[in-house]
Length: 188
Image 1 (cartoon, rainbow, N blue to C red):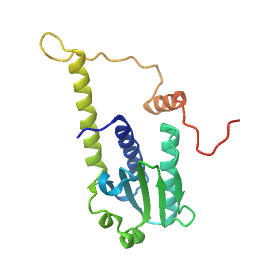
Image 2 (cartoon, rainbow, N blue to C red):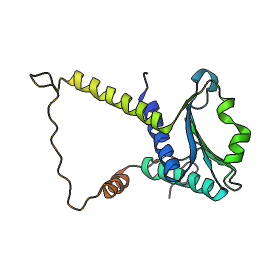
Image 3 (spheres, rainbow, N blue to C red):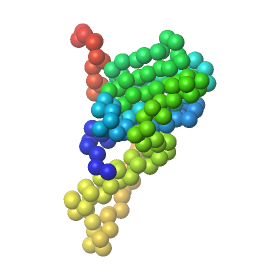
Image 4 (spheres, helix red, strand yellow):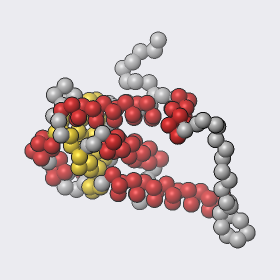
């Protein structure tokens, strides 16, 4: 499976959104890898269910916040937040559907997209990890970073700043990232 850097970035964003669904107790989360010939619009649908409207809104809000904060990515449009029965976050390359369980059963998007390949978040993570490790192996083999024995050199452990927990490192990295400008916002 050959993927471009843009497709890998999209996969990382979808993976982050799926992680939010799991954290917020979204049910039956599925990722549909859409057939490019059929869809022509998006590469992925992420579909999850919520048990009530408040949970649906909380899942959608957290996805939007996390993708904005960590990656500087904003949805192109958001539909259904006020009602909370079916919330759609359109990020162009992927679309997130947060349904109430009854609405998901009624609309049955998975059935409508028969040509799509359904994946669980775990299967999706495994594919992404495999693709990234293959890229790393290819880069290493091109750069010739092997020792005389034919093995890659042992990694040295980086020293961490005292008191830096993983969450503090993520916050520090997020602060240093350059964020994309929100669509429609004016320069001040």
